[in-house]
Image (cartoon, rainbow, N blue to C red; front, side, top):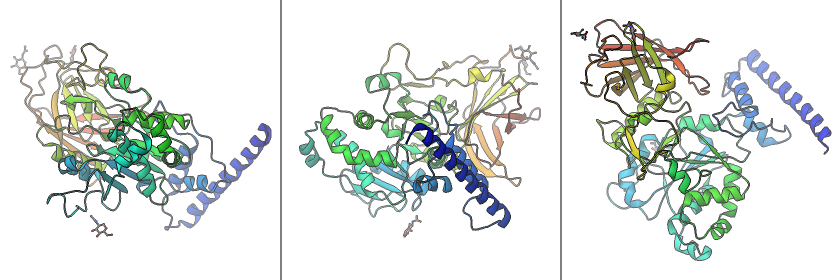
Length: 494
Ligand SMILES: *[C@@H]1O[C@H](CO)[C@@H](O)[C@H](O)[C@H]1NC(C)=O
Ligand SMILES: *[C@@H]1O[C@H](CO)[C@@H](O)[C@H](O)[C@H]1NC(C)=O
Ligand SMILES: *[C@@H]1O[C@H](CO)[C@@H](O)[C@H](O)[C@H]1NC(C)=O
């Protein structure tokens, strides 16, 4: 077809498509059919996403509207992607699973989340058998030694992980749109993953994942690779093509000792490259990552990997408890998880910074958002690294100056109130005990012991601009309330 013909056909198709949708919308409006699975607004928003995703940067260019002749593309407009369209392949090993089972059970929803845990050998022990209904069903990975012989590959681990993608595709259920690979020491936020993926056309080729936070890991492995423990998300056509060609790729790169890098190379040789997502966290960090989680980038939170390698994310809990605890907030509103909202209490010169569902900080000084958006370096580098740059993001150094160091509060509980708002409560982690910030007027926040945050129950998926908030605090009260709202047009958070 010539370019001109193509564009004529294309605009006719577009017109037909739009007319169809308008008619459909009218049908819903006129007959108010309660059997429709989703309201008209979902229909139109999914169309909008399909034709022009206003998605987190740096993302691929907007895909053109799908040709109406294709049955599958049309269905992508009609039914938004839901959790049933995702299949997970979690690669674990029997030895570690005894400990890591709780991490996965904190986010896995039995009979709803689809996919399998792949173990190296069959599970043993009273703690694992009979197999928990709250765990993903398990499979045993294909015989690696046989595959090694076939490919001359040098690394059994790499063989198992990369070949694992094919094993997941082989068992994927009908209607699957996205294949998600991950490790068993990761906490996933599945609803957000669905909302991220729903913005893309699953009939196209996509390879989503996250960089390492540690700049040298990207340098050592690749700036083009998804660090797989935190989740690699492949659209089905890509996963299928990958599976069909995996053995030849493993032969091609038989000498390589990194599974994530091998996966990236196989994908690149199929003509596809990484679209990095900022909410997928490898957590190539060590120690106390609370300073990282309190100042999350403005993107939907998708995952936290290396959960065993860092301190428990809530200091008063062990790792398993902390995993279940953070999912409590996520059950009420995953879209706001870790989203940072900042507001100022002018009469006291206080600044509040909330990382929704995780922590809240009070500074005894007015600080601008441009500064507060940078994580406090409470954590250490993944590997020894003498000189900066260490991280893929800007950091602030921890300080013990009363005008710089925050009062720290952690998420305690969540509920929905009678007005339908979501109320999250944060309690003080420890007394700050470094005196008051005198230069801002001698207003100590030491006596504040609890912060309650009121947010809308409406999900906030497209995070083009942060929310703003107002502080309600009666003089002398040990409790402060924060009400979320949209920012005013010219509002400055400084
Ligand atoms: C999942 O479904 C199976 C059978 O369909 C049922 O026996 C089991 O109790 C369900 N599990 C949960 C946790 O609901
Ligand atoms: C807030 O701090 C500034 C100095 O940073 C000071 O000039 C101002 O008076 C303070 N406001 C109050 C209400 O104390
Ligand atoms: C700061 O305020 C406290 C209590 O209100 C008071 O005792 C103290 O003297 C004040 N300090 C200064 C330097 O004004």
